[in-house]
Image (cartoon, rainbow, N blue to C red; front, side):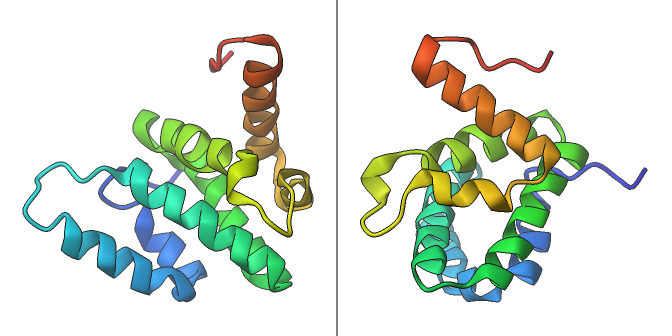
Length: 135
């Protein structure tokens, strides 16, 4: 297996898969340039909003590439990356407040097996209060 994807490397494959997100990433880096600990959850929320816009624009190919990276985050990421993929990205996609002409359910066809498993865990957390754990 390849090296684990870490907090420091997780955006590399994402930006390769989704170059249209580069301006938001650059803006985030500039805003947090003086901070040693960059709050990646903020930029993952921005990524979720970017994906909503991609969905509204019908960018199926682009979304497929993004979700392939999200699957890698779940499978190859360290504990931070896995949690960030679930709580920072998938959970934000499920937030109806970021959707105007789209719905969270419209992202389900893009989910690959591991990401789909975590998507369901987030749903069960909000519906039944089940803890989101790796079982």
